[in-house]
Amino acid sequence: MYNFQSSLEYAKQLDASDQLASYRDKFHIPKDKEGNELIYLCGNSLGLQPKSTKKYINQELEDWANLGVEGHLEAKNPWLPYHEFLAETMAKVVGAKPIEVVTMNTLTANLHFMMVSFYRPTKKRYKILIEADAFPSDKYAVESQLRHHGFDDKKGLILWKARKGEELANYEDLENILATQGNEIALLMIGGVNYYTGQYFDLKRITKLGHKHGCVVGFDCAHGAGNVELNLHDSGADFAVWCTYKYLNSGPGSLSGCFVHERHAHNKDLNRFTGWWSHNKQTRFNMRHEFDVLPGAEGWQLSNPPILSMAAIKASLDMFNEVGIKKLNEKSRKLTAYFEFLLKQLGEDTIKIITPSNPDERGCQLSIQVKNANKELHNKLTESGVISDWREPDVIRCAPVPMYNSYQDVYHMVDRLKNLI
Ligand SMILES: *Cc1c(COP(=O)(O)O)cnc(C)c1O
Image (cartoon, rainbow, N blue to C red; front, side, top):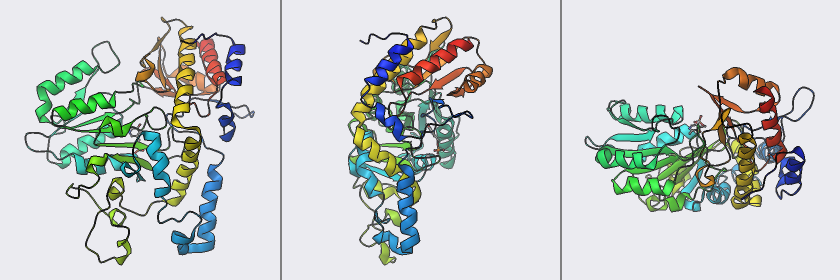
């Protein structure tokens, strides 16, 4: 499909014809001590800072300085409805309707709040299924939910494991688990894009399968949001959560996104934890009103949110809105295919890419196993100016992010890796 070549000249040509190349200049690229730009391939862990973020945050600092409490209504972007300014673009980014998304809390907290509503175990149907190499926080969260409801967290947790000698989870195995234990499983909670292997799951297929067996289905899309076209609404998933500091470039520890499918939007009977921000906006400040929950994902908010963090999210989302997730995806596919092409030149007996080779089953991240490598190799790679991420026992994760990474970034990464092995 692509006719890639392995020269630096060719990488320069790709950059020269890249329609999104100018977006790199809209980000702060970290530099080494000599002032050379680092090869930053770690947007899957912490996205880079858009240069516009400062302006967005300063606007809120100024309005706070000048207006004090009046800023709730009088700020240029009034704080009271500030989360609403994010809903439309956030919905587009994850393929949802605005009523289905809200930005609130942090990721693991949202995962718990979603389980308060969507993990409703009974004596017979109480188990939770996750993928075997789920992100640790997610595993801890579901284990604690099992204990919270009085169940044994070992008996109650079902792992969807890759087969012996394989790295990727297999749908047939999931079907088998559901065929044999489906009636005991209350919840399927899967990482939409697995953080370790970079495998992008077929959310619709998993949801259909889970629903067929009477399970609730939720996804943690921390590695999907801003990276792949998630189509959350079409997937039919009951809920999803994600963070905004990875591919969504909103700053360390920034707020999380949350999706609740439209079919639950008006169900006031769902068990949930509530606060004044879950309450009807018209009567929220009457303070004595009987609780009246907001429809849609907004109805899961608890608190008035941190505006400074939301301002950073708005700065980033405005860029996503400008570029569009489709264009990003196009570049992402090409950039990652190019990365894969170069890595394969190193020889398949030296390097193994555990991420699926099918572009529909991955985002931009490639997880690379280097034969006989240990953390020392990764340290040297870092010293050479490549920022990537090491996961025990032997995987280097690299994410060329289409918004700000160049083809030359990818070229230089592989070139430096080659010199080290
Ligand atoms: C990054 C990530 C987290 C981190 O959770 P926080 O609550 O934001 O600290 C959790 N789960 C997954 C799948 C992640 O990728």
